Length: 110
Length: 117
Image 1 (cartoon, each protein chain N blue to C red):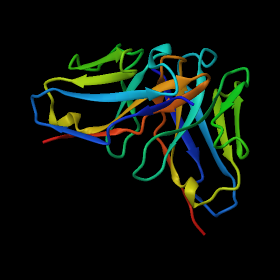
Image 2 (image 1 turned 30 degrees about the vertical axis):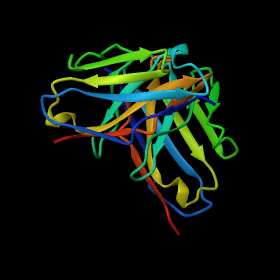
Image 3 (image 1 turned 45 degrees about the horizontal axis):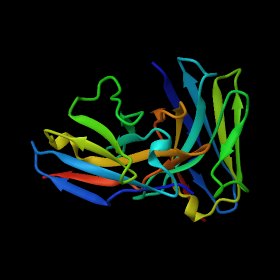
Image 4 (image 1 turned 90 degrees about the vertical axis):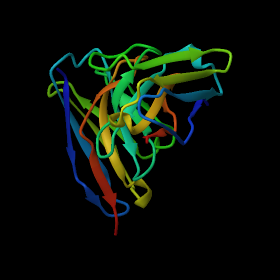
């Protein structure tokens, strides 16, 4: 079974850049698209990156996504951190016809 | 602008059946997979299953024996039924639109379902 592993938490200061990793196991992360969702407390998740590196309308250009085939991982990079970016972030992909989520990463902007 | 609105019972006793419905407003109903996801308190997201407008459903194997996802194309609605619930099924349940392989968007507002005797 394909699984996605994320760090439990990351922290960084406002204005800095942070990268959240999502490592695939049991399959190639490049075989299908990876999405990233932001979830603030008490709210439903919203998409910040889809199709590996596409930003939906309304998502700031500070958010970017990438795939590294050599490490079988995807990354979400947020530059120019703002306090409003503090949230949980989840990567998501597919294993055949099933949806797979990473365990989530809590981003603290301090 | 597509919107998903969901509803269902929020408090169940063990062994009862969890039933939720999600209505889709705006946009095409036939081009997508319609998903259910849950999130236990303080934990991560767990995919439950999905269904397309033909009624073809995919289920997370963890739920398969207890799970039915159905669709009513005449009302642009889809539903979740999870039988024999226990306290471990306590979670916020979300519905979402899926465009394979490009992710889930948008999401419903979420429904907290608590299983307690």
